[in-house]
Length: 131
Length: 121
Image 1 (cartoon, rainbow over the protein chains, first blue to last red):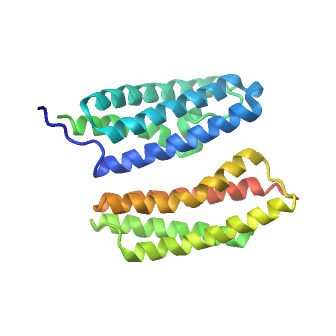
Image 2 (spheres, one colour):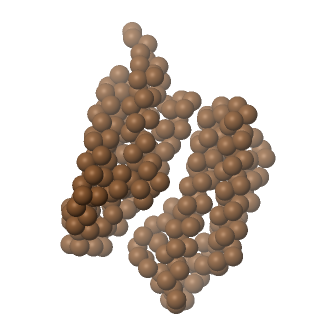
Image 3 (cartoon, rainbow over the protein chains, first blue to last red):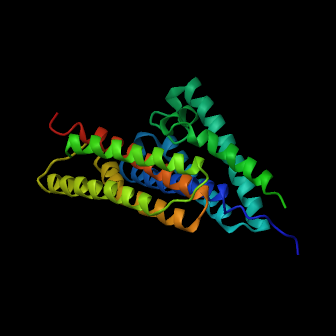
């Protein structure tokens, strides 16, 4: 059996906690936005919901720490990094695209740039714990 | 919402956050003193939440009411969950987690105060 170094202890538990925090924060935010004012900025709010789903998936994947969950975490972190870079750039170039803030607007500036740093730390952690 | 109490809460949470950071730098897990520290913050927080609930019952309505309510419901769980995780992770990383929880609480209280600022003003 291949030995897998756990992704969910030590520094990994810190990463997991922050992912969990963002999963809860993004999910609640998306729920409020979709429920109360979806028509105002459908693109931004759907994006919030997508971001929320990715944070939830990443949280669960890091918590599981199996070979499969590592792959899931890798995909989730990659999508997240691409998302924050693309949305961040678009929101600066064309603010009209996102009339209301999303987690990823301005590279996550509304959340202390944590959304930008988090996927990078996630990818580094996956490399560090490589079996 | 009582502004003075909110400011005291934010300062207390920041102190606990820095304290946990120092504990982590000293390569220690959280201990009983941390529990007492967050207990003080949590009591202040629950008093603030209770006051807000009474004010809401009297008809005060902050901006973005739904968001405000979501914050209000989630905010009391931040420190207990952080402390629980620091009990599971008995290394310096547990201290880091509790520190992050305390800083998160400070931000959330600031955010609550921000939304509340529009009441009657």
